[in-house]
Length: 280
Image (cartoon, rainbow, N blue to C red; front, side):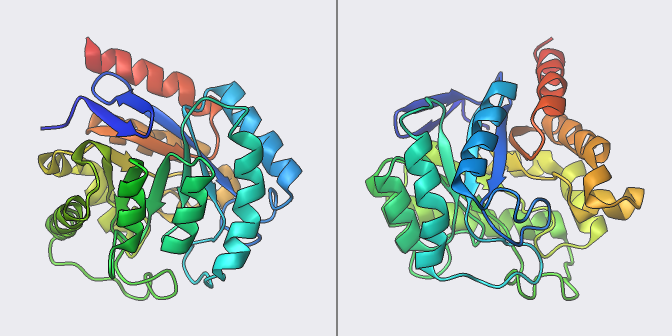
């Protein structure tokens, strides 16, 4: 059963009657979608404020690209990209701010600076120090599935049962995070579309997303501009907005409570209408 709310520090979010739109802001030179556009802190802050004005419910800042083949960056560089933007935004905005990082050292710093949610694409692997940092601040945690690492995840990924295997991985990682002290009401699960998945795997996960509801956690989906759209429609990244919208609609109707997107305005009316249909 899906919980009725999600807690992240001082925020309590209704996840039964509302779908939450997360605006993705990549402060990187090499992200597949918008790499380099917002590397300057001023440009990043302007983009963030624009996303809020257009209707984003949550902002997510990322300082390291996790696209296929991306090269990891040092902790110091990741912090150099994220912290100035976070520190400028935090006193200006009241909505939750998430940070996309898998490094415990980065998580600790950004949580001290006011981040509310940590999005861990590695799904609490290793010693779990990131989960401990999240627990100490009563923050939210997104646990995502990825087969392999960004460097090799798209090199012939294979599954016998993608929905079952992703679900089992997430269940194991959720249990680990809870053992490490993360509040059960502060965990989101993400099947990781495009992270070590073939095109048909991504589509199967969207089609059977409701299977993840048995984990008892809100579900997040991030289809925005990804190859699963490009593979079907044969379109470049900058022309995938309608395909993205179709994936968002499928995700919401199959149980997603959070959707990560780069373009806010086209998503807002779509999600509001879908929520009204679900409540009818």
